[in-house]
Image 1 (cartoon, rainbow over the protein chains, first blue to last red):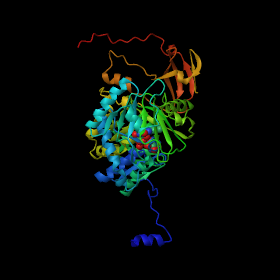
Image 2 (image 1 turned 60 degrees about the vertical axis):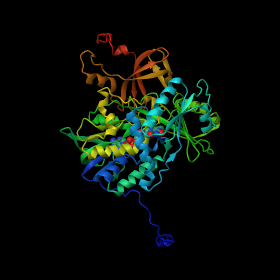
Image 3 (image 1 turned 45 degrees about the vertical axis):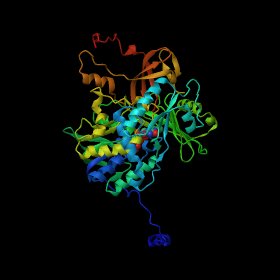
Image 4 (image 1 turned 180 degrees about the horizontal axis):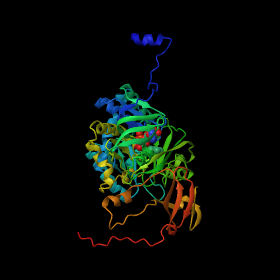
Length: 413
Length: 100
Ligand SMILES: Cc1cc2nc3c(=O)[nH]c(=O)nc-3n(C[C@H](O)[C@H](O)[C@H](O)COP(=O)(O)OP(=O)(O)OC[C@H]3O[C@@H](n4cnc5c(N)ncnc54)[C@H](O)[C@@H]3O)c2cc1C
């Protein structure tokens, strides 16, 4: 037995590992201020510290770490989008996710189970063929499968729901889930280790702008000077952008999800149907998670509604009729910042040193590592957007160059 | 079910309606710049507070305006667009033949 272990076993006080150092006072100035302590903000801080040697960073979080959409999502990770811009970007993120547990020395419970999307119409079958080819082209693993193969993958699935018989499936072998709060905490811990300061209960309330630059941010704990600012606040993106007069096509919609009592394992892949606006997956604890489309109109609120429960569960029961007797355990919602083309807004803003990571809507968890990596590049280079995020610039709306992922994101995950 | 008080059809379930976006002044498409038009088409305020919005009752295709609080979801008032649009709105962009 190693001596250290023996000593540890016999000691009367076990050394407690500290995830985050105790909060300190805010300094008067930082090189980089990151607004939002969700996965995206924390990942940006981590890669800045790790690859660019920039550590005079404050991550400001108005509530608690990972209390936003990072820990409200249904944790679907995939790259089977439609456009080449999108697929290239998400495929890179999936690759990074696979190594994240090693990188953190902390288990994020990455679980590659494959994602099955169902086509109920000929038009969807055609779109699936395209998505399969684009995905393969960029190194993803995706293929079309028929009803028999679907039956073998998911024997409990009803292949003839009501008026919408299943015609074919898009089988995305790379589809996965991970423990979302572990991702936030992994980044936080590793960033803090490298000297990044993470301040919870610190809300950015306003800005000081001089000569087209943000020179300071005003918080509930005082004003701090900043070299540059990254905003990564998901659902409330517009509220900060409005303070700076940055116009953007973002609408904030609630997105609801729910989970049942635990069952014995019966469902390995993630199953999704865009025609039924529903996706279903079983967690490692046996619970079944249901998610679907956003609420029908914008709202800054995380309440749950009976309407959505009824429509979502009706679809879920069409897919898995035996679930009709399942009991719901929990329900929740997050506010999601939706863009018209279902792609994010990343890169520069009209202000010189203010960088945007917004418009992540209902699909941004899977992009957490690549967002952190590319935003760090953007900041470290003083505003040169890396090729991967160039297509997602805010200007694309005024130049009419949208990156339309609607068809690949409509079931919202 | 949340109830929407429709100026034409009275109180109905909100699932009978479609949200149509914030009420914004439309620039003149014949004279405005591309940037102004893109701003009108895409951008929005997305504020928290009482916002005037377009809504449509699906079954009757009736468009009206609603003042709704985007944080509490309270609907304060709904009214016919003629309160705001006292004159007919015409689109000035001349129709052009598309040649390919
Ligand atoms: C129900 C649901 C299911 C989803 N399912 C999936 C899925 O399966 N797969 C997927 O890829 N994506 C999914 N998403 C989307 C995903 O969760 C988000 O896109 C992603 O988590 C955004 O990460 P973030 O770090 O940008 O935001 P967040 O985690 O929301 O972090 C932003 C933080 O900013 C803080 N903040 C806001 N304003 C201020 C301020 N003024 N000052 C300081 N701090 C501030 C907030 O408190 C918050 O903690 C889902 C979302 C929801 C709601």
